[in-house]
View 1 (cartoon, rainbow, N blue to C red):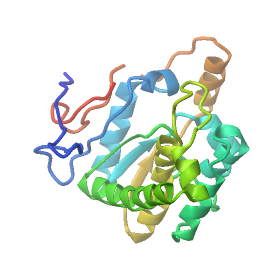
View 2 (view 1 turned 90 degrees about the vertical axis):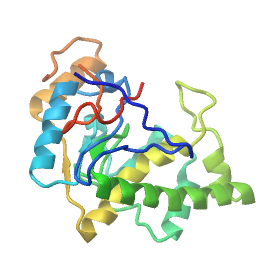
View 3 (view 1 turned 180 degrees about the vertical axis):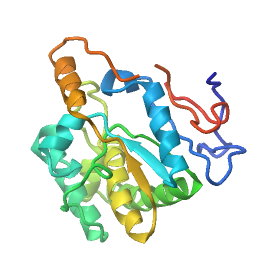
Length: 229
């Protein structure tokens, strides 16, 4: 049984209360099964397997068609995903992070469907905070990168959305590319041919059975973490 638990701290940060160093935890949107080609129990099974085999995190990219078309998540935004994001990329590049290299199945990620242990989360939070703090400074200064960051994401589902969440969405793959070079172990969802057929059927408005519906808490100790809606 999955039991929601409040893991918000007084400082507004999410905290995995009482979890061990190697326990996987994370948050999944209630839209997981709408966007994914597998179901929630399958996600949990694969995450458990990854943890047992020594991985620090399990990542799941539901947009498998995008991964087959685009070289990386930055290219996706430039070619229609979120026009106007280029100044942000250039600023990240100026900070010393490569945004041009191709991304494989462990780095091409959308929607932030993942879970990991304390080592993974500590590094990921620190990485994101460094880049986002720099972007916030650029926004206060009114530079091209800052204006783009605080400006419209041109997102069809929310006209008021800024670029910030879509920048955050793309930082996971960049972090993984940096962290794996220093020893972080990552496991990721690898779609099968049937998954591409399922994705195509979904886009065409047809129903297609998924490989195994609940939202993610903690695969290793299911009552310990939290679900997100």
